[in-house]
Amino acid sequence: MLVEESIMRQIVLSLLVDNNPGVLARVAALFSRRGYNIDSITAGITNDPKYTRITVSGDNQILEQIRNQIAKLVEVRKIVELENSHSVCRELVLVKVMADKKEKQEIIAIADIFRAKVVDVAANSLMIELTGNQNKLDAFLNLMADFEVLEMVRTGITGLGRGVSTLN
Image (tube, rainbow, N blue to C red; front, side, top):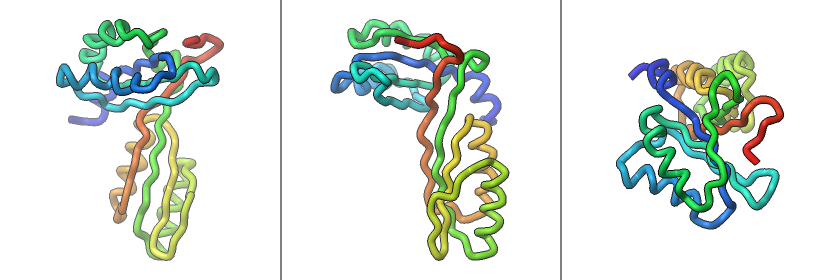
């Protein structure tokens, strides 16, 4: 499947939930019980330590089917769809690349174009940190495929609605 196709069908839900042990597991279990795949799921405490924000991205049809089930969980306070035009969604990737002196310069030049940061330099490798939307990260990773990628990790999507509106 092309990257463009998956992005067009993907939606992002932002959930405000009570900061209770096991709440993330209960949300994820709703997907696994039905055999649905989650593209990404992130969770973290909010500015109010009573609450955690969970961001789930996946296929539009799947998330619509499961949204009502999530709303039934006692800990869930609010669910909002983060639409592209009304929100900012980002992802983080760390990429460790094998590189000699010449390749390091090439990789750093590519990283500069993407406004990525070199966060670790070793004798034969570089580690790059990049934050942005999925398209930006995918484009960067496509260019890194020309080098020997030793390790890579992506955080998954997280986001907030634009303006002064909040989930609280």
